Structures are given as structure tokens and as C-alpha cells.
Image (tube, rainbow, N blue to C red; front, top):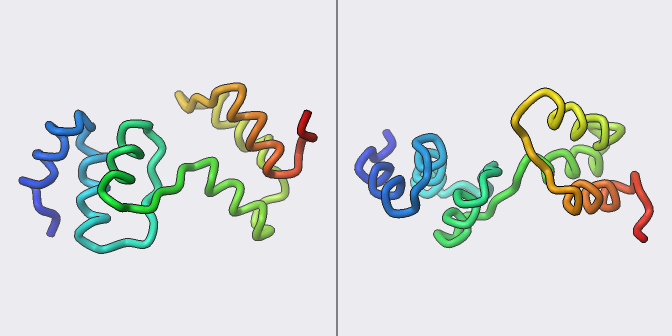
Length: 105
């Protein structure tokens, strides 16, 4: 059972939302190897607490590397078009380069 007091404390101290606070506390309690988290403040807090993190774009890159998906670009484009998921143009290009879907300039 997740410690609600620790969740509330983290939420207030780090100014995180409920879900991110719960995910971080759960990761600490379960001693997980990796936490999937995308929001900048949550990522920074998880790293500060010694938790290894990966974001959705990292999962997509790993999926391509392992052959689970053919291309990252259409998936990123769909995320941008259909949700509030935001990717800076610099990061977008970097992900495509890392995925081998665009040449470095």
C-alpha cells in the first residue's frame, strides 16, 4: 500500500501533481529499475531521489531499436496532433536523428 503521507509531502515540496507524486513514491517503495515519466518537474524530482527515468520518446526509441515499431516519426506526429503532448522542434529533430529517420546537419 502506497504511503499517502509521503505522497502528500512530495506533492507539496516538489509542487507535483497527485499522479506524478504517487508514481515517484511507488517507484521508491517498490525499488523499481525504471520509471516512465515525462513532465519536467517530475523527472527532475525522480532523478534527485535516485530513480532512473525514461520518457515516452525514450520508449519509442527503444521500441524501434528492438524492432517493435518501424518508425518513430509517425507516432510522434500522432501524439502531437491528437493530444497535449508537446515536443520542442530541437528534441523532435534529435529523436529522429537518434532513430535513424533523419540525417544530422
